[in-house]
Image (cartoon, rainbow, N blue to C red; front, side, top):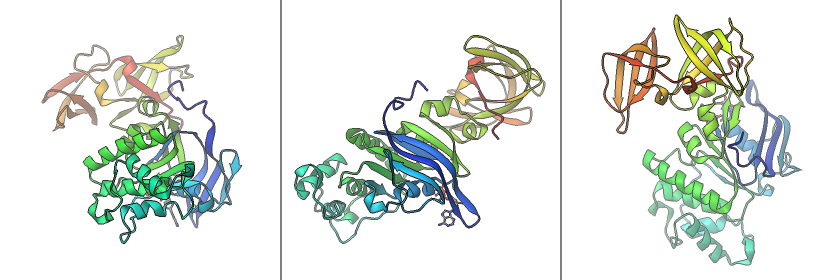
Length: 363
Ligand code: ATP
């Protein structure tokens, strides 16, 4: 995709046909992934989809049942975590409580010389500055907030100057406000160092906000790998459309297809309601086929003159900037966003290019 700025960067790490089997559970199922140098790459998906296991395979805490893990061009499948040149931060990777902040970070050096020929003290000071905890060397961990503690854990992971940073839900124990602040800081640190980063989260909003590319995982494998804008605007499958952000997914019957240059148009029916959709790229759809399309809540408008229908307000949630309204229409719930409160019967519509057709052959 054109919005993928890392497409030409060298590959920093790759998984080739990697699977992990635990007794009856296939935690990771034939995964092929390439993460590029300097990229912030996120694995997101519902509980149990294999995010953590994938990260542990990259770290070397688990050995794959099948497949190869490479760093750069090198096969590291049999290499132990200590020899992989990685920094790792876990959700609850508590700091050593009996050590000061400075000692915790210095511990990350593993008694080796810091990179760049500087002293350990200087390295610790530099790292604390990087994570915005300048001068806090002598504090005890229990004098820090949760967000500050996680930043110390990040500084500790970065101490030896690893090639790759692996983060497993590092913010999930923090409250919402702190999480949002920390994610800006984590992104800033990553950019500052240009360090290849693999991040695990179940929070789709966090994944979109922080990443260069996102892999949406389901049942042990990525279902779509793309930059956040593409994941949001052009979800490849119904699962991705449903999992990422608020969405309205429709199954429709195709009445007519007008093929054009670049984009095509389709006239479809949901029940007896006709809709006109714009389809990006070529399409092999024929009259009589079924398709699945989605419309984001923000693409519905009461001013639209195309694809209009009338529903009844089922509920309205005031969210501050906008109100999330649910309309009952033909036995289904349609979610939209408005700036003013609505009630009773409401007519809304959407532009043909406000809909996105997903690949309904992948269920
Ligand atoms: P969560 O967001 O809940 O942490 P996840 O996406 O990180 O989930 P994993 O922890 O990778 O998912 O687990 C994937 C699957 O593998 C799950 O069904 C889990 O129960 C199983 N699994 C993970 N580790 C083990 C293990 N050590 N032994 C047996 N099964 C395991």
